[in-house]
Length: 201
Image (cartoon, rainbow, N blue to C red; front, side, top):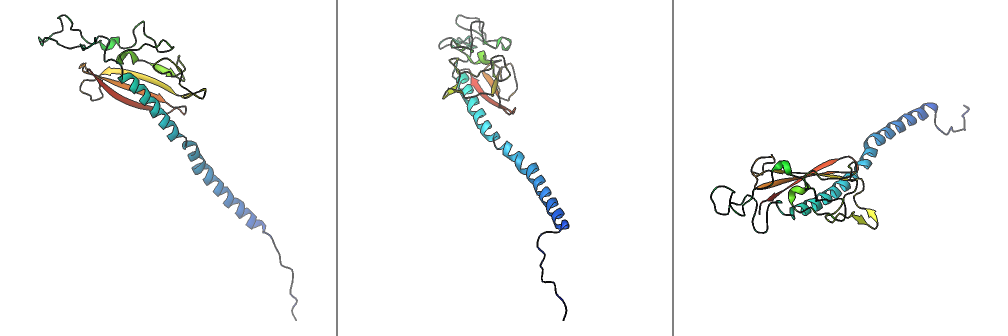
């Protein structure tokens, strides 16, 4: 009668352990290179939504202002009141030259005495992270706070205004419309461009 070994071996062999470690290493590499970076990017849409809200607020504020410093009451700048082809009669005044865009010497937007009053006053406005005015403010010069926290901490805005009468996105000499470009930079360093037009009405 043959002798049989009644002991059954349990556990892994050295080869099985090495194969298991290699498979685990491959799976861990896959997770760290493909899945973990996606977790960091999941915050990007939230920042983009907040950037859009901020840009919409700034654009709404700008477009609510008068078209030009030289527009008075019901008389618009570049309005030829008597249709004689020039602007040399009483009450007629040309629009602000593009080289004079930006706030006048008495206009500020960095304190509670904020007094911008026309579209091109915003040309060159820079607020938020990385700029000398490190806080983004509302039209009254107040810090935007929610529950005592700066709503747009880490964000920054930059505004450019130019004439673009034919509305093709390129600066031109037609002063009938102003192109407003608002650049919002998120805390992650992504810069998003927003634009709007304000016509001379």
